[in-house]
Image 1: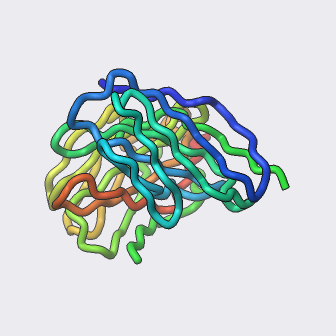
Image 2 (image 1 turned 180 degrees about the horizontal axis):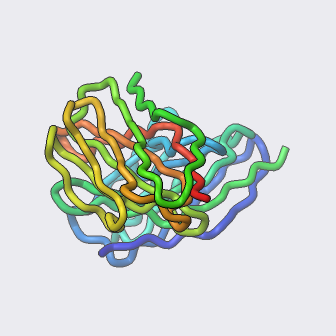
Length: 110
Length: 114
């Protein structure tokens, strides 16, 4: 099973960009890369996903390495409300089940 | 907006009790999932269902069963609760079609078995 590796935690200052890395060296050609985040006392929420090309949406940007063995979630201007655990996940098989890791706890300093 | 609701935010049960956790979604999604979340382990899939009356085992189905009699409702059953089933339980739903549809999560039920 393809797995992801993320740092346990990261700190950033409010109103600065944040780059959250993820390694997935065993990714297969059909695996999508998903990012979810979980705010305190809430269920996870979808952030963004991609396959090969970089992606942007209103929440974040996803930069995918050319060999697809790593990706980076970019929050362009972090706020205190972005403090959460961020999960980098690969989907696999026809049911697109998500295989969750431990995630990165993002701490935002005012 | 998609809404996934879970019957309780907090639940305390005794060892050996039968426990029902209910999940309801309002977006006519075909797929529904039950996860448990424990510190340092991330989310682990217990069961999922891709249609009414259909179910598939996830990674950790032992000690659990599920029921899906209606499309909008997916129930997780602990036949005889044990202390090692103390955990946060999360329900999610997802539509089908062009992959990969995002999963929508409920707020979670924190279950304590004493």
